[in-house]
Image (spheres, rainbow, N blue to C red):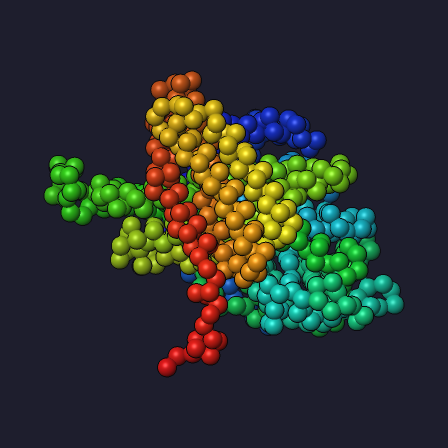
Length: 606
């Protein structure tokens, strides 16, 4: 199994030289305590926890998996102790209000934490990760009484949380939700129904689990307009916050999964379970999107995590494993053959992994700053500011979730490829990374759903292309001062400038075509998402290259190798990965007839 080492040098580069997080935190109403020294201490402490506690449990957790006996789920050996250490360290409440026992720091610090934890052990990270979305939903939409009851134990990590959306007959199409919520004389509700694919639905890490559940009232209108949101606690909660008897919600089964086997994915049965409405009647889906957007950004982190971990596994193997001679002649003259890393095709795979991981890190860190502003605006009660940053982040979310997870999965498979046949053997851990990565393109909305959200909702319906125009203006503004530069920076700046103009024109063309043929939206959306992802990652690779070039002229010789490698990785991205966008451009502009013309009956075999 790869020995995870937190990429602190690159993280610090992104935080301090690419994005100026210190200045960002200084400008936030809740960023006063996030001083450079505090941020450094948090990153270092989390890195130690991840390297020494979580990473050693990754392989064993996959091998052992979770077990269930009469609704009681047991996590793999070591998970319960690791979670206790996690909670005792105050990690769960890092970015939640001090009034509920949290540290009140900006949300982005949670994403830095999530990156390291997720790379070290994604299955473990799922447990506290689901709680964060639950906490965000309760904090934003819960009543004062609900916040006072549920937030303190959730923030401390004493309790855990989940999101319960999917049912056997519906996944993405939540209009088909059938779970019923019957009102009771005391103002509570009894929920009855079955939810599936519920991550962390049942486990032994905490003494209570708070479920956020979508359900319908008896008089609810049909479709998504008739869905309400409820808090259903595994253990009934008394008025003083203490736990009472067991509620009528139970895990009926564990899903048998391809990967993340140490994460308990449950079928949850609600048999008249007592719950309480959160938010407004029949507006549960709006509130749930707070949870879903949190989860989608977290899933984008998974794409980064698996690219990083697979790279960390593949690189040492490529440096040590020997096979044949390099085509340009002997490299390791003291050996009868050369290390794999001397072969250009192996270098291509390693550089792809590295470019994806470091490019994704920049994309996510930038989005995290937007999330900081959005969360701060909620606390400030500034609705206009919230809507501005929510809209801007809304453009990023489907690209982050869809594009980064697709490339993270590709990177995980490349790690196996570097190992050759040994990559297919469990003992090396590379196949586990690929299995764990596979779910990332599926849950929290498949890549196709993210693509429809991006092109259909964000670009065409909500903003009429303004979101693309705004981002491409940022691309142009970054590239413009460097258009006449020599060397790689000038070359990449000119390429980014041209791509920004191309993206603008392409968006307008799709808008005009979609007005005449609605099938264009569904037929072109995947390619538009992938094209947009390559454009966006290119922008942030140029941003990194500019910062690295500046560092070369200002920093000492001890940083020369880092900055040089950063610029060279950026060159690789622009010359070897960004051109993939051209294929997506051509495909999305192709007529829809080749997709839609075949009769449904002709899809059958024989």
